[in-house]
Amino acid sequence: MTMPLPVYETLDAVPQDQREDYAEQDGKWRPKLELDLAAEKRKRAELLNEKKEEKRLRDAAEAKLAEAERTAEARARGISEDELKKIADAEQAARKPIEDERDSLRAENRKLKLTDRVQLLALNHGVMPDRIEDAMLALERRTDLGDADGIVVKDKAGNPTTETIDAFLEKTFKTEKPWLYTGTGASGSGATGSSGSGGGSQNITTQAQALERKRAAMPGAL
Image 1 (cartoon, rainbow, N blue to C red):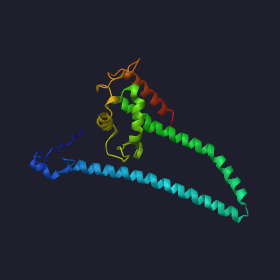
Image 2 (image 1 turned 45 degrees about the vertical axis):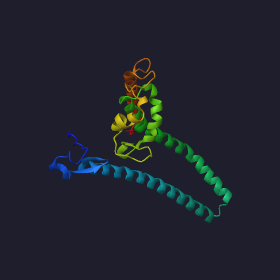
Image 3 (image 1 turned 180 degrees about the vertical axis):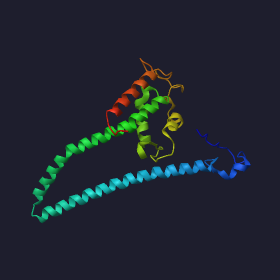
Image 4 (image 1 turned 60 degrees about the horizontal axis):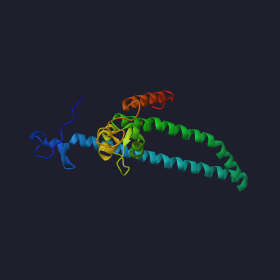
């Protein structure tokens, strides 16, 4: 594994023969290669969001056009407004079970690919099992599915970042909400890692096994 290049507090601390390879960011001197990589990851996350929005708008426009074409064709054939409405209502009623099933599958798929994975990672990074529900209320706002079903971490304003989910849970989220983690001096039954009968590690293992069974039962989920 390649070791990350060091970050320096000042320009004077950067070795003379390496200074052209470093740049200042947020008050520290960081390798230009890492800064460029972070910028590319950020652009990719932003582009992914743009593509999602473009697809939503395109689908909505296509649906509106198709509806307008059906209405024009029906009127050309002499179908009245009331008859047209009855046809539209019948079509909507016929589509609803299919759309409900589609939405249900999407929600289940998202739960498996994002929610369940984030929850398991949070537990593995030290979030107390008896406080995981509180943690997930915040984590659901700070995470999203990215390209190739990767997990994207968002900042407090909802903008995508280049931070990995592991780094976020290990440092950023722990700093923001230390009371959710074991061994941080938080009060409560889980402060020392206990979460009732069975212990935290056993609960995490059980949840991991349950998650794997869910994934196996849903072809193409991951």
